[in-house]
Image (cartoon, rainbow, N blue to C red; front, side, top):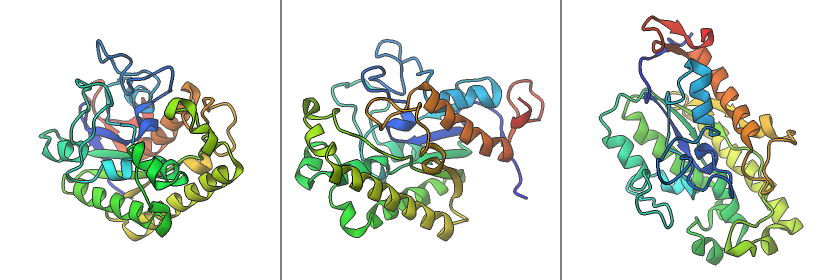
Length: 277
């Protein structure tokens, strides 16, 4: 049995990934993982926020570093990321490099990467390029996604943190979020929807390969495809992002793993297991 990981203060657990980690709800939360651009208050409906509340009653327990975009590429070394149109967005900068340079005692990383690799690969490369996304990944069955994720894992492992990698959820995005909604022309057709399913399967196969091939580098996170596939009441109209109930479901799935593996030493100053909170 693995020795439990002691967590003694907020920020020792980080969550990295795309807009689903950030807690984005297009049309509702435009600054995820923050509620607004004035106070930069944390968004209460993101899974990292709710996970902290579940584990120890402290919403600041898990540091939410989720960013929308082509995250399998954006989270590699040397890559920069900017929130479009928001110069002072707190997460602007170099996502992976900032973690590597951080003096903080980060002990656990929760990772879910690859959802947007699927979306960008459905459209022609020239359109993906205009969207700031990745190109050509589907041509090699997303082996590039796998190699990028492995590269990120290897870098993060230098910080001696325990890393959990999750499988991505199902994706039935019909379009509507790009080019004034004109991407519906591409995404709503049957062939595009078939590709979304096929490419999501491929990404999760690559993640399964990572789980099996690098057990000393990464631990199994939740299988969000299996968990959410048959759920009907958790999706926004875009069939890509989740409502508050959906993000709560994600938080509970992560909590089930951390309650098994983590020893919380925060709330009362004495050693307690996460499951006792």
